[in-house]
Length: 156
Image (cartoon, rainbow, N blue to C red; front, side, top):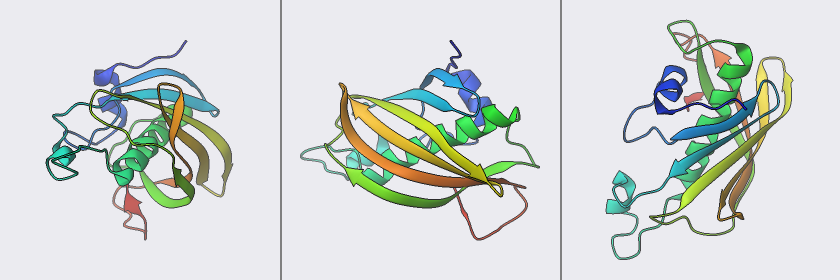
């Protein structure tokens, strides 16, 4: 079983609080899949405005957490860490569906698998679950590029 704690995750993702959305990697298999978790707490910055009377994790943050898990898998599979010569850029989202809300106290489980890698583009099937129920699912695409190469992609 390949797992990563938060300190190891921070070696692979350039994100930091409040945008680091992966707390632990439970397991990963190079070139195949990753399972990670985000412990959702009321202290998340986004709950201040979404929504103060009934806090719900924004869908865009769920997708971002899945994308960060996908980036981890890309780096781990490539055997490299982000630096001045490599960063993972988000290049697309397809078939995103939101099935249930994610609220404070939930453990958001992210399951990401590689669908294909072609011409430097990774395509992943990603699912976020709470208590075994699907909260979100999507197909995500990303590419690994030089961090000085400001191609038309947005940083994860």
